[in-house]
Length: 187
Image 1 (cartoon, rainbow, N blue to C red):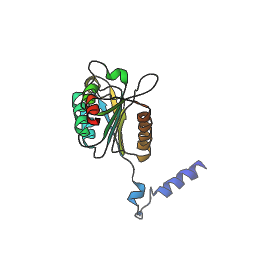
Image 2: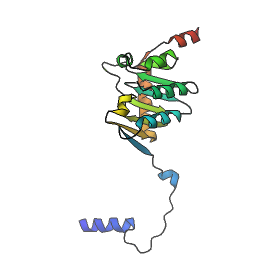
Image 3: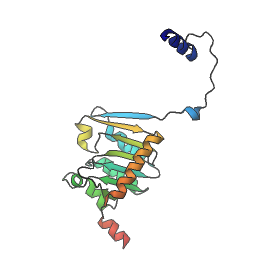
Image 4: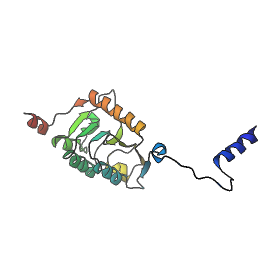
């Protein structure tokens, strides 16, 4: 029985056939989502992330535990000048000395604190609601210079949608941070 199964698989797959008929494939129906990975400190994961942020055309949603990397912060600020940007951060971590979250708040970026029992420990970015960066990589200098970290970039619609749904839930539940710039603009 095992031999029959093995031979059947070989025959059905075309292995060993002298003349194989070309298959016509609908590329749209069989297209597979792409994915990329990055491992720090061996690879420039911070650069990959800020280029990903720069690629946003319609929206940028970020949930991140720690943010201290000045260039990533700068790219978030630049994006916020041209598209809607929402950032969900851990309240405690964002109030630490080296955090750049206060820079985003002062600039009027739409920031909320995660509302949970312990840490808002997510690390993911959604670009245009269609592409995702996630992994262990915090948006810090240590993450790309010293730590063993990883990033995964995906555009699988089902996976991305799960992250979009999670972000929306956390955003609704989060605590709004009112910046002086946003308060002045609303008056």
